[in-house]
Image 1 (spheres, one colour):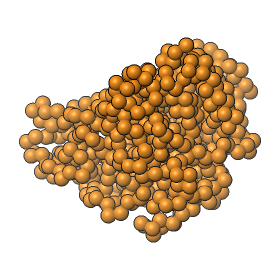
Image 2 (spheres, one colour):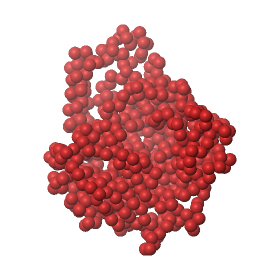
Image 3 (cartoon, helix red, strand yellow):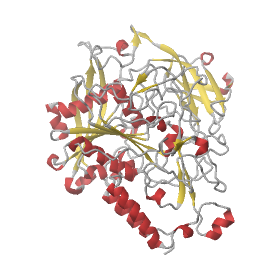
Image 4 (tube, one colour):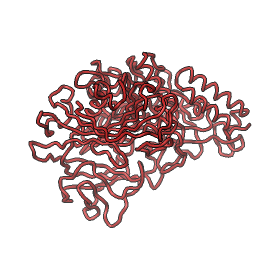
Length: 627
C-alpha cells in the first residue's frame, strides 16, 4: 500500500494555456513511498520478496517517482485517470497519441504536448516509476527497490547479456550490463560474437575486451562492434533488486489516487474511473499486470477499469524474476532466447499442447479490466500477434471474452506515428511512415465509453482463418515489386527455455500473418485511408542490408513501396501494381474515395471526427494525384 505521496512542486503547464473546454492544466511532480506485506496474497508472487529487507513493521519498502498533469479546475475535467505506463522511464503518450514530438520527457510547453488530445478530453494524466534500472535523467521515471540477499549474504548467479550495435539506436561504444557483475576478473566471464541468432558463437580472447566497471564492458584497442552482430556476455551477477515491486507500486499508486481521501490534495477531486495505456514494452507490462494479479489491490478493489495495450503482440516482460532484464524485447534477430512470450497468450481460455498447460491472460476472479489490444502489422511478423486470436497451433480462430477486443491496424509498423520518415536506415526498403494513431485515438475513446457508460466498442478486427486472410508468411500473395526485399518468415515464438544457456527450442507455436491484396496491402484489420485508397504499398516488415546481417528481419521497421506516377513509369519499371494515374481519374475521384472510407470508419467508431477532417484536408491537397 502507499504510505505517502509528497508533492515537490506544482506549476502551470504551457504557461496556463487552455486545452479546449477543460481549460488550463497543472504539472504535479513528487515522490511516493509504499510498503508491501510479503505475506499478503497479492504480494506472494513477487520474486525475491522473501529475501528483501523489512522495516520495523515487517514490510518491504519502495519509493517511486510521480508525475501528474491535472486540470487546474477539476470540475472542468472528466474525473478519470489516464495512466500511461512509462517505457524504459520515458513518457511516450504525447509523442504517440497526440502526434507530438518524440523524446519529450518533461512536457512544459504547447509544442511538447502535440495536439493535446488527452488533455482536451479532461483526463488526469498520471505516470509513476516501475523499473529500478530505468534512466532517471531528464525527468525519467524510476523505482527505488531494495536489493535481495540470502540472509544478509550477497546473492550471486550466472546470467547472460546480449548487445547489438545500430539496430535499435546509435552505434554502441560500450556494452552496458543489465546486472551488476560480482567480479571484474575476466577469466570468470566470457564474451562471444555471431552474425545471426542461429550461428555458432565465437568466443573473443580476453585480450580483445575488458571491464570498464561492474556495469559495463568494452572492446579493446579502439575496436568497434560490428553493426548488427550479436555480442553475448556470460558473467556472474550479484545484488538483484526486487523488481516485481514495480507491479505493486503501479497498483498501489493508482489505488491510492482512486480510493484514499488524502489523494484529493493530489488529484484535485474524486476519481471515478481509471484507464491505463502502454506502448510497446509498456503494453507488454500491462499484459503482465493483468496476468499476475496486480489489477486487484491489497483490499480486493479493482485498479484499472480499462486497459489499452498497443504494439505488445503476445509479449510480457522479463521482469518479475531474479536478475530479470525488463528492457529486453525478442525479435527474429536479437534478444531471441530471452523469456518474453509464455502461454497463455490470449484472453480466451485455451489449452496448450506444447506445455500441457491451460489458461487465459485473464484471471477470472473479478479483477480483470475491459481490455483493448491494438497491434500493427509488425507485431504479426515479430511478436506472434496472431496467437491473440487463434489456438496455440494456429489451426482455429478463437472467440474472445465479452470484455476483450483485438485489432490489427493494417499496413502499419511498430512505433508508427505522425511525422515518421521513409529513410531506409539499416534496411533494404524505405521505412513505413503510415500513422496508426487515428485508429488508436478512436479506440481509446471507445474504451472510455465502454468503461464509463457500458457502450461496447467495435467488434474485433483481425485477419482470420475462417475468411482466409490469416496465412503462413510465405503465402501472403505479395506482388513482385521491382527491387523490393520481400520477407517470408516470422519471428519464432516458442515456450521459454533456459535463458542463461539457451538452445534452439524443439517446439514452436504457429504464428501467422495477414494476406495481402493485389497491391501488397493487407486485406484485413482496420484499413485506414492510406491502405483502403492507397498511393503506395505499406508493410510491417523489412530486411537488413550490409553491413548489417543481410536478409534478417528488421527489428521494428516496415516498408513503404510507392506506386509509379503513371502507366509509362510503371511499365518501364516492370511494376505489376497499377500506377496512381491509372487508379484515380482525378483529384475529385481520389477525394471521393477517401471520403467514402472516412465515412465508413466514422460510422464504425474506428475514427474520430477530428481525424476524419484531417484525412479530408490531406486528400484535397494530395500532390501525387492529378487535379
